[in-house]
Length: 249
Image (cartoon, rainbow, N blue to C red; front, side):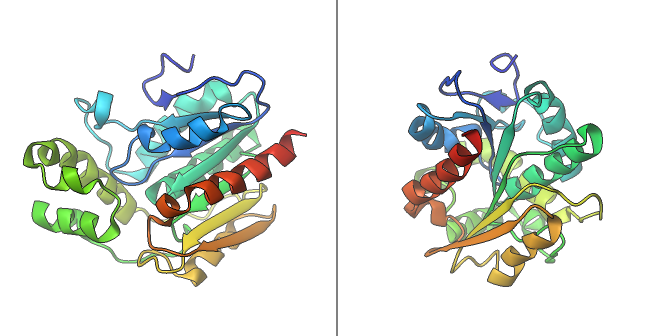
């Protein structure tokens, strides 16, 4: 069910976990970004990560260019797992996508994730006019360098860049053309995580996640930029574990 699904990657098995953490990668990211999370939690929580089309083992597939398409297909892929409690963690574009999948759960099933962790992303209702997806290849690469979200060795390898840029551009198109459509308010806790020097998210924009749930809100601010979690991996993993293990008791 999980291992045969092209959208889902499970790096470790924890059959006794009462909650499954679903991880949604950032623009240009892949499921393997969350391997360290799965590795750290393998004895306590089941972790799976989404693999979007157009990258790694799905690189020959056409990448999707809208959050709505990504959310519809992600929801369909995760639907077989929704008979048990799920928690969502999304970083950057992945946070928006996790929110939209949670909305679909609410609309279709009348329920949602037990917790939504929204990292490095402004609230869905907070819009910025961004046009990275319209830049030429050099412009997109410069944006990646500024955010430090891609291995610098890859950014210097033209052959690798040609392979990954279509997926990166598609993801930026999806993220930057997304427009929030008012719908049901979530009733799960939302934990917003952000770096205090993230050029993509202000503290006010992160706090606005509280408008999207009736289930409680918490803001956690870490030193760093858009990829603050690379420097604070252990703290972020502990935060997630502590929250979800309480729900598992």
